[in-house]
Length: 473
Image (cartoon, rainbow, N blue to C red; front, side):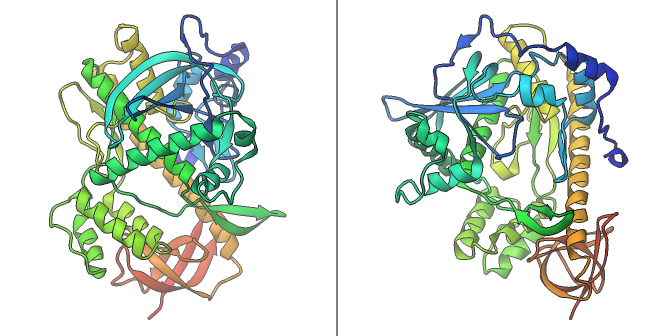
């Protein structure tokens, strides 16, 4: 963490702020929505719950979805010690071994978290989704919510995917909470509408592999993968719609903000080459709809290897960034989502850009001056981008540490792999099984991103997270 510019600890001033915080943010005067059947879906181990969801079927067949986002600003004031430390790190960092939270846990997992059975102040983002998938209306306001059920991705997703056959029983909280099963099915219907409309507009449906070390008895024994499920898709679709709504809502009110952008792929030519290897033709100029259609075909044709292709496309597209969003000026869209207006607003407990956006929204609702100048927003956008890139490096390094420990006793063995990166710093591959990443230090000539290759493990250094391979002929 320190090598990449992060402060892994909280200083005495932050500790004093935490000690003085005795209660959640006040809810006086806010719209009372605690009677609605709110629920959260997140990782089973997650305790920093940033958002809740609820849906309502309207008489014309449309579905109103409401997303409640934790009012972190209500407890973590701008320029307070906890805020300044959060600004410095700008993100929570998830290493697999431990989590380095952006905010003290007393805030992020307790007083600002939308925990089950607790009334909490929130920002409500509302979208009305027509049967076509179009969003006909959206609004933003403040309210009080109460989480009726803390649900987990895997169990909820498995049940949602099998509700028609009834072969998998609903999670206990779903079965025990009156009306929740029907509520989740309605949410799933709304999410499928949103996804269908986004895919028709050229959004890319990617599925990448992220391996987490599994330790037993002080040894790394496996690497586990996070798989997409119906529940993860549902939350992803709702968050995208909410983040688009926030960006448009601020724009319509003449307010500046921070937009999340992913520019046209840096190496589109290589993506075209990859498509040609599968007998598909992509246009010479970047086109998200054509790419989305190609990816859809490959997912259907070869679902087991689709994550490998997804990873190649992600690497070739290049990273996302935060940018100043001035009213009437377009800083760029999000190529992967095929969206021209996209913010980050739904995770203020773990991303500083979202906390900034929350303050901008609250100031707009109160008809108050913006809490940040345009110059400050531009500087913060650049800082959040840099810190996000650094966090990815920390997380990637720790995944490599775990993988190096797992492979330490397998020197000399050969593996099938896919090339995931090629630059002046070297050529990198990911093994198909186990899904470990490393550098090809010998015999890498001619390899490029997306190529299937065979490599031999020639060395590991767990302390540095190094795994070295040699290409085989």
